[in-house]
Image (cartoon, rainbow over all chains, first blue to last red):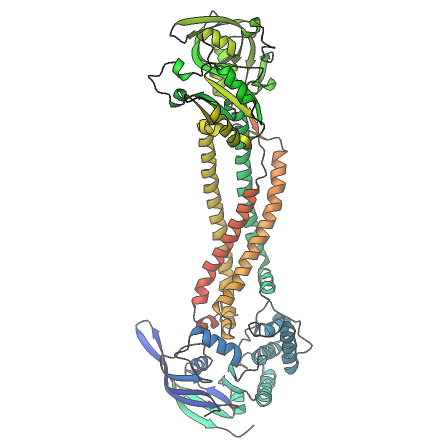
Length: 232
Length: 408
């Protein structure tokens, strides 16, 4: 049980669209263990992003139980969830979501701003994270001075700089060409091993799904397949 | 990091930020110039009121202050004013003490007669009533040390002189009611025609030496004593020292208690300043709400991202408030420079303004009022912070997943 990072029981998410109730997720049961590389797959509207957002504590479930790193997401307060996201979770978004007025290193640093560390340690760790993703020579560049692949690397550096337990990645390769997409996946795989971090990502890209060691397939808000693939 | 972010975010859309800074500094300028202009008018009025009308302190019979209709002329007079005048003159800070007698009578130069306000005063002591620059014809109005022949001279207001076609060198007969109710008349020479800044005085008033007023009214009493001080700030202290010197039938009052028109003017300017400042700071507030709202709309996705990576609502609000404060500070700084330069330019331009009731234009001077600068600075800061909070609150209330849907 100790190595369970995410535990989901009978999870539902209901959206009210006008007078109609629409279930984005219904009766989901899932366990994700430490070090796993899990891909949430499915067509558009299948519920994979909704599930990813719930696992990332960005949204609240309508029903059921969701435990992330031992924290009950349904009952936790906003501050507790913000602290959990800041200290234990790392996020990688489809469109990189970097702050455009900050340089690469400042974007990474910003993730550590509330941490109880000195300014010099913050800079050292941020530089190390950028070095690790291969952008040691681009620390002063702003997002608009970087390519798509480089921006996503900065986003990954921001996601790992505080040494998270769980990385949440929503369509991390969707805005990239094949070469960059492959490199980003490769990087995530390496980091997963180095940092013993769990990676959960949502994607419908076959390349991504082929790299994951477990694929959870969703359709109309329910899990229709949960398969482990060969070790990568 | 917060400050760095605030500065860089302000530079994101330079044109928008510049426009907002211009609005803030323009508003700052308007408030400071308006208050500086009003302060100068008030200061001139204060100086004029004290110097030529009220003095700093007035001493008069209690019944004159109360103005009951059944009180007789003598009830409203200070009997034997000279000893009190001397005692008050010995108080430290007192520049002069003079007596005055004001009454209504008829004036005639033979051809025409007209009612006028007659003001008896001591022209050699109370020089502020008729300054040399007020004289438009004739000579400065003095009694030259007081020989009895020197008291038969009068100064007549420009408007009044026109009505009866009077000129310096002519004789004027003044007819009035004596202290015990009889009718009396004196003849005097017009030596001065004057024009003050107050048209009403020029149209109605004749100044005469107090001794001539005494002869006409057949009395040696004084309607009031006018006390002038070395500084406005001494009024309260001197007033408290005068009070034990006067008898139970006499009261001393500060000029502010007497000068109703000045008080009303001051209240009017205070209200007008408040209304103008409120309108301007509301415009600054709305302009900043608009600027920050546009910025927030463009950065909703960024707000979502920052919250996703664990930044709290208060941290994000602090970031935007820092931008608002910075905007306000830069706008205010520009406003200070612009205001100071404009105030100097206007004050030295020689422009004039005619205010209601004035007989001549007065120069426009923008006074430096520190409190106007401080108030404008604080009000700008408050307006900018409030505007930021109003604009950002809605975006911060949004769910993270909804905010993330906005493009970054």
